[in-house]
Length: 394
Ligand code: FEO
Image 1: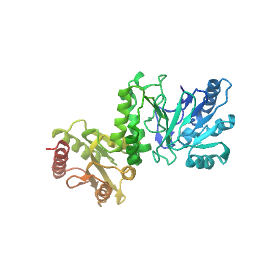
Image 2: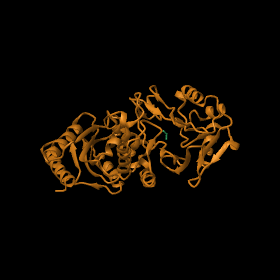
Image 3: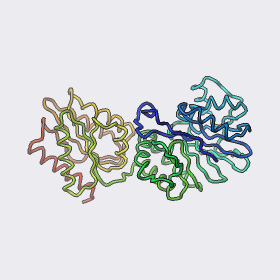
Image 4: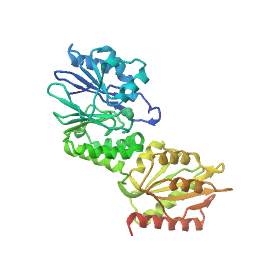
Protein backbone atom coordinates (compact mmCIF):
# COMPACT_ATOMS: atom_id res chain seq x y z
CA UNK A 1 0.00 0.00 0.00
CA UNK A 2 1.55 3.31 -1.04
CA UNK A 3 0.60 6.95 -0.63
CA UNK A 4 0.86 8.64 -4.02
CA UNK A 5 -0.61 12.01 -3.12
CA UNK A 6 1.13 15.34 -3.03
CA UNK A 7 1.26 18.79 -1.53
CA UNK A 8 -0.27 21.84 -3.18
CA UNK A 9 1.70 24.92 -2.13
CA UNK A 10 0.37 27.22 -4.84
CA UNK A 11 -3.43 27.32 -4.68
CA UNK A 12 -4.43 30.33 -2.56
CA UNK A 13 -8.05 29.40 -1.94
CA UNK A 14 -9.48 25.88 -1.77
CA UNK A 15 -12.48 25.71 -4.10
CA UNK A 16 -11.41 29.27 -4.99
CA UNK A 17 -13.21 30.21 -1.76
CA UNK A 18 -11.45 29.17 1.46
CA UNK A 19 -7.98 30.59 2.21
CA UNK A 20 -5.36 27.86 2.65
CA UNK A 21 -2.27 29.69 3.95
CA UNK A 22 -0.72 26.33 4.87
CA UNK A 23 -1.60 24.67 1.56
CA UNK A 24 -3.42 21.37 1.19
CA UNK A 25 -2.67 17.79 0.21
CA UNK A 26 -4.49 15.63 -2.29
CA UNK A 27 -4.08 12.05 -1.15
CA UNK A 28 -4.18 9.09 -3.47
CA UNK A 29 -3.29 5.48 -2.66
CA UNK A 30 -1.82 2.62 -4.65
CA UNK A 31 -2.60 -0.98 -3.67
CA UNK A 32 0.10 -3.35 -4.89
CA UNK A 33 -1.46 -6.80 -5.15
CA UNK A 34 -2.10 -9.51 -7.73
CA UNK A 35 -4.43 -6.97 -9.23
CA UNK A 36 -3.35 -3.36 -8.81
CA UNK A 37 -5.55 -0.47 -7.80
CA UNK A 38 -5.34 3.30 -7.45
CA UNK A 39 -7.77 4.73 -4.89
CA UNK A 40 -8.79 8.21 -6.09
CA UNK A 41 -6.56 10.53 -8.09
CA UNK A 42 -5.34 14.07 -7.43
CA UNK A 43 -5.95 17.67 -8.45
CA UNK A 44 -4.53 18.60 -11.84
CA UNK A 45 -1.93 20.90 -10.22
CA UNK A 46 0.12 17.84 -9.15
CA UNK A 47 -0.91 15.53 -11.98
CA UNK A 48 2.52 15.00 -13.56
CA UNK A 49 4.16 13.72 -10.38
CA UNK A 50 1.12 11.57 -9.61
CA UNK A 51 1.29 9.85 -13.01
CA UNK A 52 5.03 9.30 -12.54
CA UNK A 53 4.37 7.68 -9.17
CA UNK A 54 1.75 5.31 -10.59
CA UNK A 55 4.06 4.40 -13.46
CA UNK A 56 6.94 3.75 -11.06
CA UNK A 57 4.88 1.49 -8.78
CA UNK A 58 3.42 -0.57 -11.61
CA UNK A 59 6.88 -1.68 -12.82
CA UNK A 60 5.41 -2.27 -16.26
CA UNK A 61 2.34 -4.19 -15.01
CA UNK A 62 -1.15 -3.13 -16.08
CA UNK A 63 -3.29 -1.08 -13.74
CA UNK A 64 -6.35 -3.19 -12.89
CA UNK A 65 -8.67 -0.75 -11.11
CA UNK A 66 -9.16 2.98 -10.63
CA UNK A 67 -11.39 3.32 -7.59
CA UNK A 68 -13.29 6.60 -7.52
CA UNK A 69 -14.62 7.42 -4.07
CA UNK A 70 -15.32 11.06 -4.92
CA UNK A 71 -15.76 12.96 -8.18
CA UNK A 72 -14.96 16.51 -7.03
CA UNK A 73 -12.16 17.94 -9.19
CA UNK A 74 -9.58 18.11 -6.38
CA UNK A 75 -9.64 14.30 -6.59
CA UNK A 76 -10.80 13.52 -10.11
CA UNK A 77 -8.56 16.15 -11.68
CA UNK A 78 -6.19 13.45 -12.92
CA UNK A 79 -8.79 10.72 -13.47
CA UNK A 80 -9.18 11.12 -17.22
CA UNK A 81 -5.41 11.25 -17.74
CA UNK A 82 -4.94 8.08 -15.65
CA UNK A 83 -7.81 6.28 -17.38
CA UNK A 84 -6.43 7.19 -20.81
CA UNK A 85 -2.89 6.14 -19.87
CA UNK A 86 -4.06 2.71 -18.61
CA UNK A 87 -6.87 1.72 -20.99
CA UNK A 88 -7.39 -1.74 -19.49
CA UNK A 89 -8.11 -0.39 -15.98
CA UNK A 90 -11.72 -0.73 -14.84
CA UNK A 91 -13.20 2.42 -13.27
CA UNK A 92 -14.89 1.49 -10.00
CA UNK A 93 -17.75 3.60 -8.66
CA UNK A 94 -21.53 3.86 -8.75
CA UNK A 95 -24.05 5.22 -11.21
CA UNK A 96 -23.63 8.78 -9.94
CA UNK A 97 -19.84 8.50 -10.13
CA UNK A 98 -20.09 7.59 -13.79
CA UNK A 99 -22.66 10.29 -14.49
CA UNK A 100 -20.40 12.95 -12.95
CA UNK A 101 -17.39 11.53 -14.82
CA UNK A 102 -19.23 12.04 -18.10
CA UNK A 103 -20.46 15.50 -17.08
CA UNK A 104 -16.93 16.63 -16.30
CA UNK A 105 -15.11 14.97 -19.18
CA UNK A 106 -17.67 14.30 -21.94
CA UNK A 107 -15.74 11.15 -22.62
CA UNK A 108 -17.92 8.15 -21.71
CA UNK A 109 -16.04 4.91 -21.00
CA UNK A 110 -19.11 2.77 -20.36
CA UNK A 111 -17.46 -0.57 -21.12
CA UNK A 112 -14.91 0.16 -18.38
CA UNK A 113 -17.30 1.07 -15.58
CA UNK A 114 -17.52 -1.37 -12.67
CA UNK A 115 -20.44 -0.48 -10.41
CA UNK A 116 -20.10 -1.80 -6.87
CA UNK A 117 -22.64 -2.02 -4.05
CA UNK A 118 -22.14 -2.37 -0.31
CA UNK A 119 -22.97 -6.07 -0.63
CA UNK A 120 -20.16 -6.85 -3.07
CA UNK A 121 -16.43 -7.42 -2.54
CA UNK A 122 -13.65 -6.64 -4.99
CA UNK A 123 -10.84 -9.19 -4.50
CA UNK A 124 -7.36 -8.02 -5.49
CA UNK A 125 -5.45 -11.10 -4.32
CA UNK A 126 -4.30 -10.61 -0.73
CA UNK A 127 -6.59 -7.64 -0.22
CA UNK A 128 -10.33 -7.71 -0.57
CA UNK A 129 -12.14 -4.40 -0.88
CA UNK A 130 -15.64 -3.51 0.18
CA UNK A 131 -17.50 -0.26 -0.28
CA UNK A 132 -19.35 1.89 2.23
CA UNK A 133 -21.83 4.32 0.71
CA UNK A 134 -21.42 7.81 2.18
CA UNK A 135 -24.05 9.80 0.27
CA UNK A 136 -23.99 13.56 0.89
CA UNK A 137 -20.78 13.46 2.87
CA UNK A 138 -20.58 15.78 1.08
CA UNK A 139 -21.55 14.84 -2.50
CA UNK A 140 -24.12 12.21 -3.50
CA UNK A 141 -21.72 9.76 -5.16
CA UNK A 142 -19.28 9.63 -2.21
CA UNK A 143 -18.17 6.15 -1.19
CA UNK A 144 -15.58 4.91 1.25
CA UNK A 145 -13.44 1.93 0.32
CA UNK A 146 -12.72 -0.56 3.09
CA UNK A 147 -9.88 -3.07 2.86
CA UNK A 148 -11.34 -5.94 4.86
CA UNK A 149 -7.99 -7.75 4.88
CA UNK A 150 -5.96 -5.08 6.70
CA UNK A 151 -8.92 -3.04 7.99
CA UNK A 152 -7.91 0.14 6.19
CA UNK A 153 -10.62 2.70 5.53
CA UNK A 154 -10.14 5.00 2.54
CA UNK A 155 -12.49 7.64 3.83
CA UNK A 156 -12.82 10.18 0.99
CA UNK A 157 -13.09 13.79 2.26
CA UNK A 158 -14.25 12.78 5.74
CA UNK A 159 -11.46 12.98 8.38
CA UNK A 160 -9.47 15.31 6.12
CA UNK A 161 -7.90 18.68 6.82
CA UNK A 162 -6.30 21.68 5.18
CA UNK A 163 -2.51 21.94 5.45
CA UNK A 164 0.36 20.28 3.62
CA UNK A 165 2.27 17.29 4.94
CA UNK A 166 5.78 17.99 6.13
CA UNK A 167 7.40 14.73 5.09
CA UNK A 168 5.60 12.60 7.68
CA UNK A 169 2.42 10.88 6.55
CA UNK A 170 0.98 9.53 9.80
CA UNK A 171 -0.74 11.56 12.53
CA UNK A 172 1.33 9.79 15.20
CA UNK A 173 4.52 11.16 13.63
CA UNK A 174 3.52 14.76 14.32
CA UNK A 175 1.71 16.90 16.86
CA UNK A 176 -1.59 16.47 15.04
CA UNK A 177 -3.65 18.23 17.71
CA UNK A 178 -1.38 21.26 17.70
CA UNK A 179 -0.73 21.50 13.98
CA UNK A 180 -3.85 20.21 12.27
CA UNK A 181 -6.91 19.87 14.51
CA UNK A 182 -8.12 23.47 14.20
CA UNK A 183 -7.71 23.31 10.42
CA UNK A 184 -9.50 19.92 10.42
CA UNK A 185 -12.35 21.66 12.24
CA UNK A 186 -12.39 24.54 9.72
CA UNK A 187 -12.30 22.00 6.89
CA UNK A 188 -15.19 20.01 8.42
CA UNK A 189 -17.24 23.15 9.12
CA UNK A 190 -16.94 24.53 5.62
CA UNK A 191 -16.82 21.39 3.49
CA UNK A 192 -18.94 18.82 5.32
CA UNK A 193 -20.64 20.84 8.08
CA UNK A 194 -23.90 21.31 6.17
CA UNK A 195 -24.32 17.55 6.12
CA UNK A 196 -23.88 16.78 9.81
CA UNK A 197 -26.84 14.42 9.91
CA UNK A 198 -25.39 12.31 7.10
CA UNK A 199 -21.90 12.44 8.64
CA UNK A 200 -23.28 11.33 12.03
CA UNK A 201 -25.14 8.40 10.46
CA UNK A 202 -22.01 7.40 8.57
CA UNK A 203 -19.91 7.49 11.76
CA UNK A 204 -22.36 5.11 13.42
CA UNK A 205 -21.98 2.72 10.48
CA UNK A 206 -18.18 2.97 10.58
CA UNK A 207 -17.98 2.28 14.31
CA UNK A 208 -19.24 -1.24 13.58
CA UNK A 209 -16.13 -1.95 11.47
CA UNK A 210 -12.71 -2.93 12.81
CA UNK A 211 -10.47 -0.10 11.58
CA UNK A 212 -6.69 -0.14 11.86
CA UNK A 213 -6.05 2.83 9.59
CA UNK A 214 -8.03 5.79 8.26
CA UNK A 215 -6.72 7.20 4.99
CA UNK A 216 -8.55 10.40 4.00
CA UNK A 217 -8.21 12.41 0.80
CA UNK A 218 -6.58 15.40 2.54
CA UNK A 219 -3.96 15.57 5.29
CA UNK A 220 -2.43 12.98 7.63
CA UNK A 221 -3.30 9.27 7.76
CA UNK A 222 -4.42 7.84 11.12
CA UNK A 223 -3.08 4.46 12.25
CA UNK A 224 -2.84 4.57 16.07
CA UNK A 225 -5.99 3.71 18.00
CA UNK A 226 -5.81 6.98 19.96
CA UNK A 227 -5.54 9.08 16.80
CA UNK A 228 -8.38 7.22 15.09
CA UNK A 229 -10.51 7.73 18.18
CA UNK A 230 -9.60 11.43 18.36
CA UNK A 231 -10.66 12.18 14.81
CA UNK A 232 -13.77 9.98 14.94
CA UNK A 233 -14.88 11.51 18.22
CA UNK A 234 -14.20 15.01 16.86
CA UNK A 235 -16.28 14.42 13.73
CA UNK A 236 -19.07 12.80 15.80
CA UNK A 237 -19.14 15.80 18.12
CA UNK A 238 -19.12 18.32 15.25
CA UNK A 239 -21.77 16.37 13.34
CA UNK A 240 -24.05 16.43 16.41
CA UNK A 241 -23.34 20.12 17.04
CA UNK A 242 -22.04 19.40 20.53
CA UNK A 243 -19.85 22.37 21.55
CA UNK A 244 -16.30 21.69 22.69
CA UNK A 245 -16.11 24.62 25.11
CA UNK A 246 -18.54 25.93 27.69
CA UNK A 247 -17.47 29.39 26.68
CA UNK A 248 -18.46 32.28 24.42
CA UNK A 249 -17.42 33.40 20.95
CA UNK A 250 -17.99 37.09 20.38
CA UNK A 251 -18.49 37.74 16.69
CA UNK A 252 -18.34 41.43 16.00
CA UNK A 253 -18.23 43.62 12.94
CA UNK A 254 -17.78 47.32 13.43
CA UNK A 255 -17.57 50.25 10.97
CA UNK A 256 -15.75 52.74 13.23
CA UNK A 257 -14.97 50.70 16.33
CA UNK A 258 -17.91 51.68 18.58
CA UNK A 259 -19.69 48.34 18.13
CA UNK A 260 -16.39 46.56 18.72
CA UNK A 261 -16.14 48.43 22.05
CA UNK A 262 -19.56 47.08 22.99
CA UNK A 263 -18.40 43.56 22.07
CA UNK A 264 -15.35 44.07 24.23
CA UNK A 265 -17.52 45.27 27.13
CA UNK A 266 -19.49 42.06 26.77
CA UNK A 267 -16.27 40.03 26.83
CA UNK A 268 -15.05 41.65 30.06
CA UNK A 269 -18.49 41.32 31.64
CA UNK A 270 -18.56 37.60 30.76
CA UNK A 271 -15.05 37.17 32.15
CA UNK A 272 -16.03 38.87 35.41
CA UNK A 273 -18.82 36.31 35.73
CA UNK A 274 -16.46 33.38 35.46
CA UNK A 275 -16.49 32.56 31.74
CA UNK A 276 -13.02 31.52 30.58
CA UNK A 277 -11.40 31.17 27.19
CA UNK A 278 -13.65 33.79 25.58
CA UNK A 279 -12.76 34.61 21.98
CA UNK A 280 -13.44 37.83 20.07
CA UNK A 281 -13.46 37.58 16.27
CA UNK A 282 -13.69 40.61 14.00
CA UNK A 283 -15.76 39.44 11.05
CA UNK A 284 -14.63 42.40 8.97
CA UNK A 285 -11.01 41.21 9.16
CA UNK A 286 -11.41 37.46 9.46
CA UNK A 287 -12.38 35.19 6.60
CA UNK A 288 -15.80 33.71 7.35
CA UNK A 289 -14.45 30.15 7.08
CA UNK A 290 -12.41 30.60 10.28
CA UNK A 291 -15.38 32.02 12.18
CA UNK A 292 -17.58 29.13 11.03
CA UNK A 293 -14.95 26.69 12.30
CA UNK A 294 -14.90 28.46 15.66
CA UNK A 295 -18.68 28.22 16.02
CA UNK A 296 -18.25 24.43 16.31
CA UNK A 297 -16.21 25.00 19.47
CA UNK A 298 -18.27 27.45 21.50
CA UNK A 299 -21.62 27.04 23.21
CA UNK A 300 -22.36 30.75 23.42
CA UNK A 301 -22.35 33.19 20.50
CA UNK A 302 -22.57 36.96 20.86
CA UNK A 303 -23.44 38.78 17.64
CA UNK A 304 -22.48 42.46 17.64
CA UNK A 305 -22.92 44.60 14.52
CA UNK A 306 -24.30 47.99 13.52
CA UNK A 307 -27.08 49.05 11.25
CA UNK A 308 -25.69 50.01 7.86
CA UNK A 309 -27.70 51.52 5.00
CA UNK A 310 -30.90 50.65 6.91
CA UNK A 311 -29.88 47.01 7.07
CA UNK A 312 -27.21 44.85 8.71
CA UNK A 313 -23.51 45.65 8.36
CA UNK A 314 -22.36 43.47 5.40
CA UNK A 315 -19.65 41.31 7.04
CA UNK A 316 -22.15 40.16 9.70
CA UNK A 317 -24.87 39.68 7.09
CA UNK A 318 -22.57 37.49 4.97
CA UNK A 319 -21.45 35.46 7.97
CA UNK A 320 -24.98 34.90 9.26
CA UNK A 321 -26.14 33.78 5.82
CA UNK A 322 -23.42 31.12 5.87
CA UNK A 323 -24.03 30.09 9.48
CA UNK A 324 -27.81 29.86 9.04
CA UNK A 325 -27.37 27.77 5.89
CA UNK A 326 -25.24 25.16 7.68
CA UNK A 327 -27.62 25.06 9.73
CA UNK A 328 -26.22 25.86 13.19
CA UNK A 329 -27.76 24.03 16.18
CA UNK A 330 -27.53 23.77 19.97
CA UNK A 331 -26.17 27.22 20.68
CA UNK A 332 -27.01 30.13 22.96
CA UNK A 333 -27.03 33.52 21.23
CA UNK A 334 -27.08 37.13 22.40
CA UNK A 335 -27.42 40.18 20.17
CA UNK A 336 -25.89 43.65 20.40
CA UNK A 337 -26.65 46.25 17.75
CA UNK A 338 -25.71 49.85 17.13
CA UNK A 339 -27.40 52.62 15.19
CA UNK A 340 -27.21 56.37 14.84
CA UNK A 341 -30.30 57.27 12.82
CA UNK A 342 -32.37 54.14 12.22
CA UNK A 343 -32.26 50.68 13.78
CA UNK A 344 -32.32 47.54 11.66
CA UNK A 345 -29.34 45.41 12.73
CA UNK A 346 -30.82 43.87 15.89
CA UNK A 347 -34.01 42.90 14.09
CA UNK A 348 -32.01 41.32 11.28
CA UNK A 349 -29.68 39.41 13.63
CA UNK A 350 -32.59 38.15 15.73
CA UNK A 351 -34.30 37.08 12.52
CA UNK A 352 -31.35 34.83 11.71
CA UNK A 353 -31.19 33.40 15.25
CA UNK A 354 -34.92 32.68 15.04
CA UNK A 355 -34.19 30.31 12.14
CA UNK A 356 -31.65 28.26 14.11
CA UNK A 357 -32.92 24.94 15.42
CA UNK A 358 -32.40 23.98 19.09
CA UNK A 359 -30.85 27.39 19.77
CA UNK A 360 -31.90 29.97 22.31
CA UNK A 361 -31.81 33.74 22.16
CA UNK A 362 -30.60 34.81 25.59
CA UNK A 363 -32.11 37.95 27.15
CA UNK A 364 -33.12 41.07 25.30
CA UNK A 365 -30.91 42.62 22.68
CA UNK A 366 -28.92 45.74 23.48
CA UNK A 367 -29.14 48.37 20.74
CA UNK A 368 -26.68 51.15 21.49
CA UNK A 369 -27.02 54.56 19.88
CA UNK A 370 -23.73 55.51 18.22
CA UNK A 371 -21.59 54.62 21.25
CA UNK A 372 -22.12 52.94 24.59
CA UNK A 373 -23.46 55.07 27.43
CA UNK A 374 -23.88 54.12 31.08
CA UNK A 375 -27.31 52.53 30.42
CA UNK A 376 -25.91 50.45 27.55
CA UNK A 377 -23.08 49.21 29.76
CA UNK A 378 -25.57 48.19 32.43
CA UNK A 379 -27.68 46.41 29.82
CA UNK A 380 -24.60 44.60 28.49
CA UNK A 381 -23.66 43.61 32.05
CA UNK A 382 -27.14 42.18 32.48
CA UNK A 383 -26.97 40.30 29.20
CA UNK A 384 -23.55 38.91 30.12
CA UNK A 385 -24.96 37.72 33.45
CA UNK A 386 -27.80 35.85 31.75
CA UNK A 387 -25.43 34.28 29.21
CA UNK A 388 -22.93 33.31 31.92
CA UNK A 389 -25.68 31.71 34.01
CA UNK A 390 -26.84 29.63 31.07
CA UNK A 391 -23.28 28.58 30.19
CA UNK A 392 -22.24 27.77 33.74
CA UNK A 393 -25.59 26.28 34.70
CA UNK A 394 -26.05 28.56 37.70
FE1 FEO B 1 -11.68 17.08 -1.36
FE2 FEO B 1 -15.08 17.14 -1.83
O1 FEO B 1 -13.29 17.26 -2.32
